[in-house]
Length: 281
Image 1 (tube, helix red, strand yellow):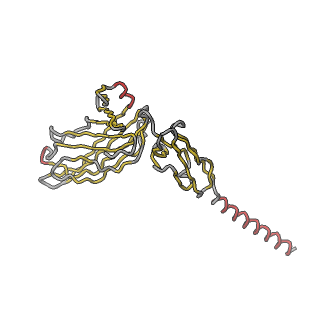
Image 2 (cartoon, rainbow, N blue to C red):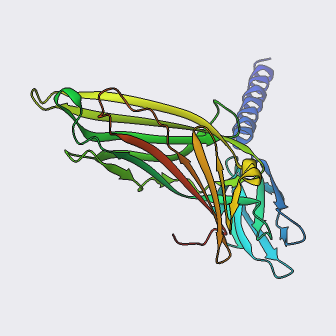
Image 3 (cartoon, rainbow, N blue to C red):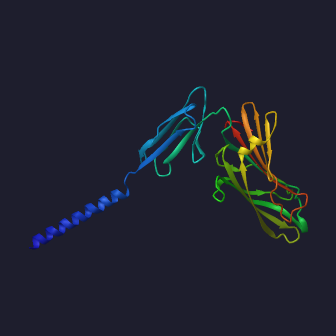
């Protein structure tokens, strides 16, 4: 009887051990990750390499331009992830998803953010003995849905000093593309510090601006040579075509001017986009 009981207990222990080991194996099980690939236009380029891949295996996507076109970039969620025709990465939960290969187009269909300029001028001295001392943060977001904008560009801690004039061009930019046929929403946040000349006390201020840009409006803009200009209530859209390159600029000129700033102050915001993407400005 005792032997039977010991044998039964041993079987239970072995079964529990096997179950525990299998549980660990399941926790670390290899997953399958779906990689979906598309071409921006199959008449201009072909793609291969999509499929289902196991965790930690290599994925190589290949883009091949045809009919005299050129490959531009691989994008995922409108962010550029590679400028190489052969793009290799490791399959996992972060890399699974849809990738699109962009190829050159005959007309302007999409473009890439190239530069952001944030200008503040004419505020060498604020009213009541204050002056601008530091730009703490300029944060720019964009997206196709209002209130769901994604990070686009950030600038942190730019010392201004007593001059009071700043042109912030050294943003950290995300390589995001934009489509001509979409309406985009933008939000801009400016956080700044200003100094009391008498007490040396530092105060803070914040400005937020929101606006949307419909690039389709260029089709109804004023045409002068190779330049198209569309003027909206709060911004101006300008498209130029020169030496095979498109440049699209959004100039937002009605940003809020705080009450402490001089009446002669100006406060503007300019975004520049280009196509193709290899132009150096």
